[in-house]
Image 1 (cartoon, one colour):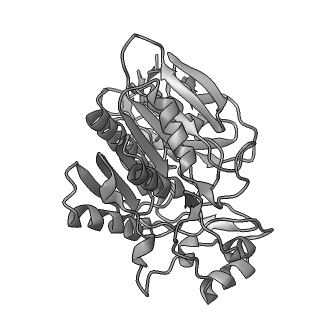
Image 2: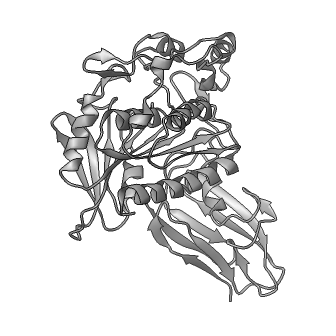
Length: 402
């Protein structure tokens, strides 16, 4: 009798799952489906000579993804228009299994932080008396808190601090004139509870992570995912994208003074895409043809620790590979005494930050009155996200000690 074997059936979101269907007839064709209510994926397989379909070894003959990919059904989930529900893996005529994919892993404690002007959430493994390293987790231009990223990272042996810096009650409404001293307070708060401290950020949070590391000597490691080694213009008020891009203001201040920034450029192609309602590659707003003003480059050589830069080669969000190369050049030119590396995924798009095994099929995403293009091929983006997360965890362990 055929059966579905799933291991593990309950696991954190960033942990892969092995799926095997055994007890089939050799050569039998089956369709394996995954549903979360609001998303679904499928793959058609042919059982091997032993009557087994093993998603860790077998490629589908047809379906939502191609090639051998144990987590293909997970990243290839596409929107159905339905309501979100449990995660169910099913095989017609065989049965189904309900999977629990945890955004907060077992053994991780959550604590909201609203003190001394700080807005964030602390995650920590259950106290075993060990002096664990700490990691500040920064989101990008979406604002808010990256709680899922922080919770999953905590399960790998860190005390993590998902830190908001705009777009939440008690914080600036817009990404404009955000004082770097705020992040110094967050470092002081975390340093009372942990050993070494690292900073991780994605997109604009990647720019910020490098800036925080370059400003505060207590930071011992920085990971910038699809970030920038250049300070870029703020994101201000406005009813639509053109108004927001036209609002000339700094993103960050230090000692009350705005930091110099690379300004947006609103060219004909960008304007036409916005007006015509087409997907907008926001990278068009970042022009480096005339060079990058030196005073906008982040002094990453001042970081007292390792630096991991991660970029995508087909990033439509902004030219992360080019902007991160600025940081790499400075590290090389100053013979940075700590480990540093720039990893580029040539076929991936903008959405590679954060934990893996989540849907990668949304090649566009909503913006202010527009739809943004993320760029890249979904499968390449999914694989880059998984590898980037693995590299991030390993790098933080090596640099911070875990």
